[in-house]
Length: 207
Image (cartoon, rainbow, N blue to C red; front, top):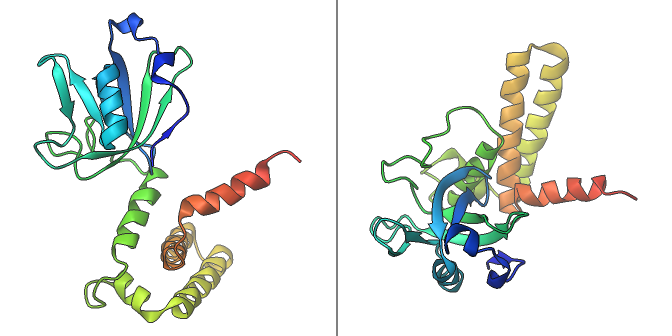
């Protein structure tokens, strides 16, 4: 379902001669994927079909991202800036976004970021229901909730012990194991890391 809290008529189409820049952001990781342009028709088409559609300034026609490659951008939300002349498009990519084969039109992100957790979570979730022989994650799912929860407990203890009795590399390694197993446990219970973040945000609300 597409989240939108404005009317297309609220936008300042005149400023850009009927075109507005549309920044596309990964709905899960927050990573910037690409920049395109939309006119009112492209925005309406995006909202109606659920796939991000732009207006090509060179070909002077609409084009839906992924039309030839199959790497669609599934629309998740649209926001506007304070001047009402720029669109922030939140989407879920189905494959590389750039025609060069990279994940974004700005190249593949190589530095560590919290957005990687969203990508890892997607990988973890993709193993659900897979053959137990295919991966360790699939075997964890097959072992059941109690065993996954036990692994989280074991990794939590090992992380605590590493913090008081070992060096930083060992602590980081154990913390990574703990976080990975926690992602599996959340997925097993049909929850996501975003649900945990929502709880933390509510705890920070005044009052």
